[in-house]
Image (cartoon, rainbow, N blue to C red; front, side, top):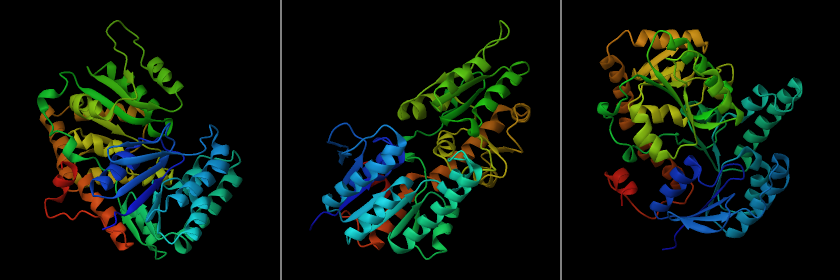
Amino acid sequence: MTVPRVCHITTAHPPTDTRIFRRECVSLARCGYEVILLARHKEEQTIEGVHCVPLPRQSQGRLARILFDTRAAAKVAHDLRADLYHFHDPELLPAMRWLARKTSAPVVWDVHEYYYASIAFNNSFRVRPLSRFAASCFSYLELNSCRKRFQGIVAVSDTMAERYQIDGVVARVVGNYPDIERIPAPDLGKRAKKPLLVSIGAQYGPKGALQCADAFVELRGTLDCDMAFWGTFHPPELADQLRARTAPRTSSDRSAIVQGPIPWPILMCDLLPQAWIGFVLFENDNLNYRLGLPNRFFELWATGVPVIATAGTEVARITTEVGGGITVPNNHPKTLAAAVTDLFRHPPSYIHQMGLRGRKAIETRYNWQTTFLNLLDLYTHLGVPAPIRHNSDYPTRLFHP
């Protein structure tokens, strides 16, 4: 039996991206596929069963990457003669349309975000009307490509998948859910003695990092607590801004912990088990943020940490449904500080039970072992089934061979 070859392509993400490499590619390799990852590697090598191939061009500027690297990636992908192509970046859409015309293999578009909404909201072209026009053009190109060129869509949520299914496109939901087999059950004995508030993952202004810092400063006068920012900071100067905002004002004050990037095993197994409450905040006038379901949300729950989420977002809806935290009407620092204060009017067991409900939701629904089955189902639907068949104990056998 010939082993099916699948090729994942990214020109924008790092080669060890959590979703692309760690979850999808490694999991597919463990199912018996020959997996090639075409990305911005330094050298050709095989890592955890995934054959990593460097892009022939690796431009530093975004414009050069879009103009030249994407076409070079498509040509290399075509020469690899894969049985299925799976790409991850909106900048690759034109090049993947070309690839779809040149090959009989199915091409799959992995939609990580609502990109058209981000183009308009972020004013990517610096002129608001032009950015809105560009967003409309991108939306048309994307949906037209899905209908006429691509054979399947991978979306990160049900709401996102519905956007494509309306047009008759085959779509499957593969969420940004953690690998529950790699995360130990919450141990309340590891919780920090002093309440620890955390913000993890990619730290941006629109994701409430500065508001969290200001809320922590508000809290220091009334609640003996600590605050940690663990992740990557965009722009890098944001880390210094967070340190400056939380700098001690009195001899008894403590500044926030600002550290990153943190290796995933250390974050999940050593640091997050100490946390009491995690913030998952967004500016919900951005559709991409309002409907997004980020890694950090589920990673907090996986370690038994309840969340404070911005109302009106998909994160807030699920939080309320599960009972794994609370929601706030806005991200104003005084609002955040008041929410934390209200939580600590209850005994610690009240907060811990919220976190345990979040962990239960991860164990039963929002985990990689479950959602990965949808990716296998899509590949099978497109005529590229997994070489290894699994029975009812499939998730455990897949991730712990």
